Length: 262
Image (tube, rainbow, N blue to C red; front, side, top):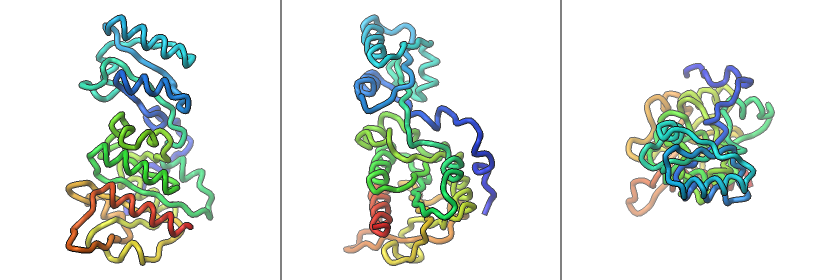
C-alpha cells in the first residue's frame, strides 16, 4: 500500500473548501439565507446584476447580520465552480461536521471504533446526495468524499440529500486512494463493495474500525483504490438482478453497519 500524504500534518490550516458548502444560484442562496438552522459565512453577488437582485440579496444578507460582498461576474463563476448556473450569486454555508480526514483521524481516540464510507469515482451528484443522507441517517462516523474524482457538494447534491448534506460527516482527502492509505495506517480494515466480492456483506466478520468503498456508477472500483483494499464484499441479489445503483448499494451497506452496531 502506498504511504499517505494526507496524514502527515493534522495541524495545517483547513481550506475553506473543507469547511464550507458553497451554494450558488438565486433560489438556493435565498433558501440558505432563510433557513435559521444554517450558519452562513458570506454572500457574494456579481457586479452588473439587476437592481432587483441587489436589493433582494442586500436585504436577505442584512437580515442574517451579513454585509453583502460584491465581486466581478468572473470571480463569482470561479468561486462557485459552475459558470452556467451560478446566476451571479453564491453563499458559503458552514458545514460543522465536514473536515479533512487527517483531522478526523487525529481526534479519533486510539481504541475507538469507527465506520467510514468511501466514495470512489462517483460522478452523479444525485447519488452523492442520497448517499450522504443515508450515511448520516445510519450514524456513520464519516463519509470520505475526495477532492478529486467526485462531485463537489453543490446545490444538486444538497437537493438530493434533502438538505442533510450541510450536516453530513464529510471527510476530505486528495483522492480516494490517498484517504484509504491514511485510514489503513490508522488501523481501519478496507473493503470494497463488489458484485464478485470475496464474502457477503451480511455474513462477513467486520472489525470495529472498518471502511467500505462504493465504486463509480459505470466502472465500479478504480484500480488505484483496489490496490489499497484488504478485501471485497458483495451484496447478495436474487431473481437474476445483477447489481444495484451506487446509492442503493451504499444505503444497504450503511444500514448493515448500523445494524451491527445495534
